[in-house]
Length: 81
Image (cartoon, rainbow, N blue to C red; front, top):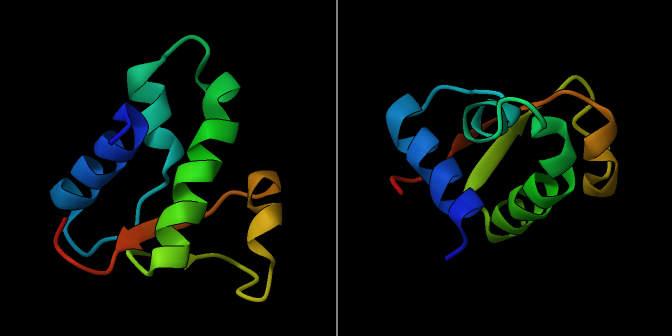
């Protein structure tokens, strides 16, 4: 399991069933250049979305997953990690 996925699932555990911004993880892990890791975060989020492990909270629920990087969104885990 890669470190970003592990960190995201740990944040899910800490936030229980509350929504949170996944980029918070990057800001903790890479405070100076967190935005350079957004593409990797998007891959992890997309993987977990496809598996049904997380849920999105976004303004436009019809937005394709491929366009998530252009918008701010929150996630929460559907099950206990």
